Image 1 (cartoon, one colour):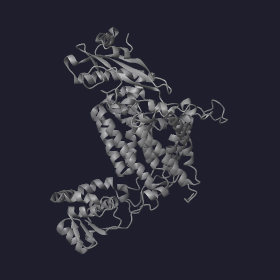
Image 2 (cartoon, helix red, strand yellow):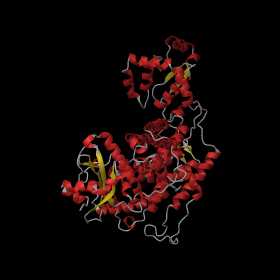
Image 3 (tube, rainbow, N blue to C red):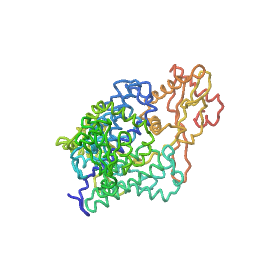
Image 4 (cartoon, one colour):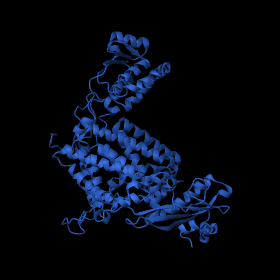
Length: 629
């Protein structure tokens, strides 16, 4: 179905939109690694909170992880560094297909190593990388594209993988709506109220308007209907451009609202990047027009015997947007060839015939760029040092040539998946939609409306597909704030007993007593949202068997940093549940002791050393908060 003003194929994607998604995904992979890196020992090694043995036991059948091959910090750090390198290649569009596949394998391995840290955004990021392995998302705004002699002129792309990506992006919202079955979403409209009153999530603007009950009521119903109807409108071929753009913009506005009101990590950014990919072609024509043949014309001459030199010229033309630049081998021009031999330099000539050599040539080329012209002043400031850099690169150009022969090979056209890849993408699309449908257990009523479907009806999951979607972590259940928002807010207190009988906050980095009050700031309790997710899971009963792993790590970490009388002997681990009540009712706090742990002798726990020390401390407020009698 060709595009026209009123009717379009909703599964046709724009190559420029795919490039935006690729760049965004690459940057998000790097951001995710940066967030995890300071805690690599804690999350990804045997000396952390989850050993490989426990990690393998946690994971279901068919999972795999390269992190299971070794439990040391060097191996984990090496894999993280390799992942960062390939994420950078993906961002720049260097060997994009290979970078996509390797990034996917490393991300699956990372997720399987410590699943207790994961949230829905991690799953969506992984799925974006997965679909990128099938998509031509390196055909625009990439180093790869500069190496193609016969690039695709059209920005239109339609295939089984484009169908899969569109349905994947929209499924996140559509099935999330169907899973929101609680009264908070359906009847009393308090879902947004509860979400904004959970201080483990809420921040920023939330505290300024979360008591506007009429507004949060209306917004609750708006969000539910938006998630249900906007994906359907985005697939309607009639008035496609307007409806798809409206749906995408509405979802992006929703995600921006999350960014300013809820602390949910990278999830909203991942969602926005995924939405970029399905922007209609006319919208991309306005956002990303073809380079105009304006600006100064120039000619770049390279050494014919230097493949790296030739590729550099083509990369500069592509990156800098030099539409009027001509590129030729210097040896094909008698006069220019003589200059190259005499000066041992590439040659750049402007419209007036002035010649530029070495670093000055690079500065002038950048100056001509409609995109980065301002950077030329910075380059000019290098002066003679710039020529030294140029000469060093020139001396090693053949080594760079061997590297770029692999990283940036010349191609006649962009490689795309073949018939087998298309069939695989189509089959996976059907199975993933099937799996999403099977996650819905209530088809009647839906948001209070009688659908006529028999009560208890559900679609069985495609279990025969389980080895694949479990192995590749393609399993999906988009239960964000579903069936209702979490109401169990609260904070953790970890009183610890030192060798000399002092009480300390065992989860703190410095020597300070445990405090009864809830930390005023998120950072006062959690380093980042990964820590919030991990500790939040330890509070849940189904994760109780992993609490002792946390206790053992706290002891090791503390005693590796403190000596003598400051050594930690034992600790108790409490969660003070602060359950959010309906509007107008006061919050109720209730303490739960999740764990007792002794760093050296388990049998000594029978004497309740931490609890006795708390009683002797005379800190009445702390004793009352922890429910100690």
